[in-house]
Image 1 (cartoon, one colour):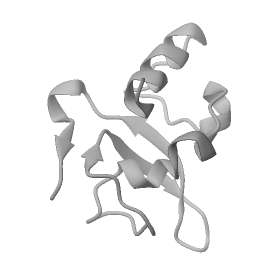
Image 2 (cartoon, one colour; image 1 turned 45 degrees about the horizontal axis):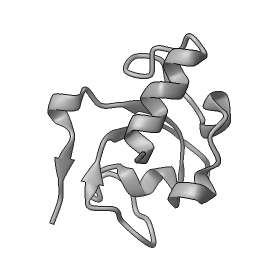
Image 3 (cartoon, rainbow, N blue to C red; image 1 turned 135 degrees about the horizontal axis):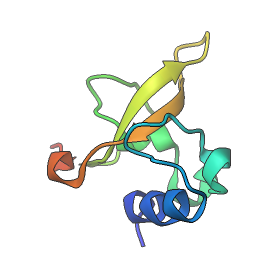
Image 4 (cartoon, rainbow, N blue to C red; image 1 turned 90 degrees about the horizontal axis):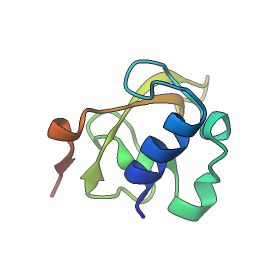
Length: 84
C-alpha cells in the first residue's frame, strides 16, 4: 500500500477524519521513514523537500520554525494528482 492508502486505513482505525483534522505521522502510528518524508507527498510548490514524490495526496497545515511541515490533512481522492 502507498502512504495515501495507509493514511486512510490508519485514520479510520483511530477515529480521525484525516480530510479535516490535521495530523502528525505519529498520530496515525505511521513511521515516515517507511515512506520518505510526508512532505514529499505535498505539492512541491508549497513545500520544499529533498526528494519530491510525484504523487500528491497531502496538504501541509502547520509548519515548524525551520519551515518544514509538521501537520497535514489528506486531500480528497479526486484531488490526488501526479506532478511532473
